[in-house]
Length: 624
Image (cartoon, rainbow, N blue to C red; front, side, top):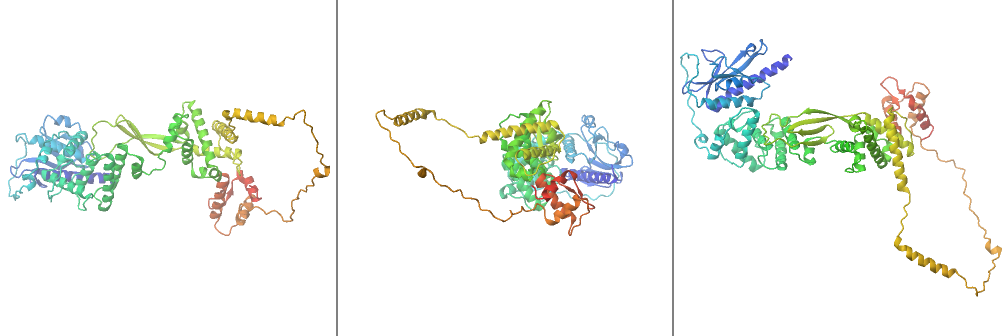
């Protein structure tokens, strides 16, 4: 670990240490002395009324914590139930006390990797035990001296007149120091107080990186609920807002304390918009929590699109499900074809031929994709995974650093966000699936483009580039199926109405009877002169014109033609402007025409790709 990382960790640990000492002083009305004559460098928290120590903190050497010996660390020792100390020693940041009586005191070693709420939970347990234990702490004999006795603070009106609802909340069981127990305690208290309102004017402060109710005094609780009441009534966050109050309210929303997921999501989005103006908490954490909220509660696409960059929300799902069952009719050919085209590289799917034959190519690619999926299933392989996208799965913690409680494990589900964001929950365990596009799919689409141009009279034929004979044979088979379908669609359809057959027979009989001539009748012949039969007919001749047919407009400009002719002849070309711009213009035209670039230019000498020399000569001569 670098020195800069160590410095940051040490600074964070010092901040955590000071925050915990201040928290205990504010929480329990204790006095804090940073210097004691009998123990220099030791900070103690004590009760002014009887001098009893409730905690002591100091900087210790690394040799006592198992860390680097040349480094110093902060530790806080607190009184604890002796029966629990052996169990707590197994935790990586707890150890038997070294300064105070080791049988009844526990040492908390401040570690930046541990959430500060874990320390606060243990401190709360320590205080609960000490309230019911006799004074048995062994502490050094004090050195008596003149000490200024601080004036006892008057109890606030909130302490003297606490509403019964808050008293009941405080009396609720909140034992337990694990994150899960802490979250459960918070959830139970939050649901109990969800409709509570207050109008108390709070002039104090409350600070916690991961706030919960049992860290707060009665005055702080009333102050928070009065703040929450104002937020609910006015629909906005006050400019002068304590970050811990806002975090506490967000934790309530994440736990669905104040309504259904749809309305709660909108409240979270409103908070994010207002937080952008007042910058009370980190927007990165807030965005992560909102995104996790949308995923966890299975909100629709319109909600997900506000949290994620939706680039291909449905396309991978369509293709992966079709891969598993190539004969499915759940998706139309247009949907499958659109997904295949979208997941192709822009310069492949955007060629001139593909644009001019978009609907035909969608149908052809759909037939080809189904055949390819069946072909690869013969070897128990997934064509989609091997040639379109591959996946990587990693553990994904929901709502990091937030206080969140699950009443029961989340049901198994898969949430498709985009081709690079798929969330999956299995037996309550969340993972995030990252999809990595496969470049081979672009080659498959280009090969399909080549075959389609050949069979559908494309202007410019492409050269075969793919070496996989297996895939090419499937593409050829798919083209035969498509051409047969198209031929069947063009064949005229004959429909016979069987109900009309009897009417047709009657009409035919009448016609036959009218043509019969009676034997008694004399027939006469009418002679028609040959002159009358012969009709002179003149066939008009096409007018000839001496005008030459208008020559087709050339494909390249005059400058581009001179440039290409020089390259074809092996001469060094000369240009009037930028050679880079000229090369890019020619390559862009050829991308539309043949689906590939023809000139390589690295800033020195342009080089012509020999495979396309004949194509360029045809274009320069006016051929298409």
